[in-house]
Image (cartoon, rainbow, N blue to C red; front, side):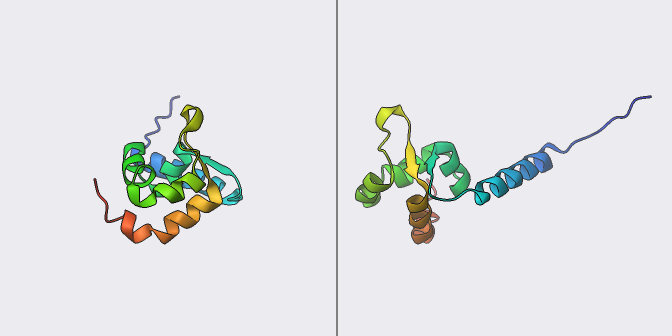
Length: 98
């Protein structure tokens, strides 16, 4: 006897993202984020984040305080500060659709 199970990939991806979000929400913000975490928090891809946030001249000085500037070849961010930055700049960043 065989049982055939069909799984909707889109629904599976959404459920997976939701579970990841729950796990991340349980963690304190007083930690470091990597680029993958920032992608998840913003729902944006790496290239968009780099162009519109990290290398944006309007945010240059603030990013010096929040990120490591990719020192050592990997972007790292102060989670608590980046979350506040994203909240403050939500409307501006969501107008940028490059």
